[in-house]
Each structure stands twice: as C-alpha cells, then as structure tokens.
Amino acid sequence: MQINHPPTRGRTMDIRALTEEIELIAGAGDADDALGLMGALLASGQTRWAIEIRRAVSGGKLDREALIATGEKLGRQSIEDREQARRELRKATRDLIRHGGDNIITRGARELARFI
Image (cartoon, rainbow, N blue to C red):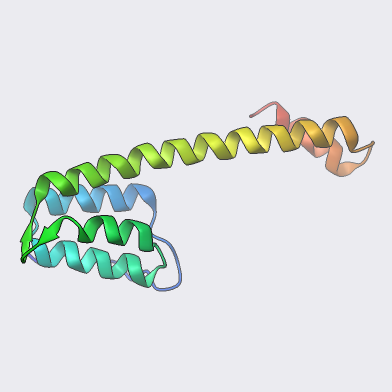
C-alpha cells in the first residue's frame, strides 16, 4: 500500500495528523510507507520523530508493534510538552501581573490568567 504524505517542507507536521498517519501505516501500511513518513518528517525538520519511525523498519520489514509504540510515545510527549508550556505561560503571566505595572500588556495578562 502506498500512502501519499502531504507536503511538509518548511513546516512541521501536526501531532494529530502524525499520530493518525502512524496508526494508518501500522494497520495497513508497509515499510516503504513508514520510510516515506520518515522522509516527510525529515523534510519538515522533525528529526527526532523521523528517527523513532525509522527504528520501526528493519531489514525492509515494518515492525508494527514498534511503530504503534512510537505513536503512543508521541502522544504522551505531546501532552507533557503542552502541560509544560502551560505551566511556563502561567508563571510568566503571574510574574507580569505582579511586576508589570499598569499598562495594556499587564491588563492583557490579567485577562489571559483567567484561561490558564
């Protein structure tokens, strides 16, 4: 089965699209499909995940379990990264509110604080 990967040169592949692609390849794809996805990830600068996907191909054969594990790892890492970014944004917002004075940026930070 040949899966056409969307052009990604110069932009990163969306996490949701990437995990869906991994699931599709693990379910119905072959080693060439995984290598094609790896190439698309390399073109978009997502080297870390390209390497992980490459590890699921050995001797021209696709290790579906390893590919599924990579997709699960990607999902967990995405959640951890999002939570870390949220914590950092919350800290920066609190610092700005405490020490930013009374200006439009500080007022914006107060409004933002309600959502994070």
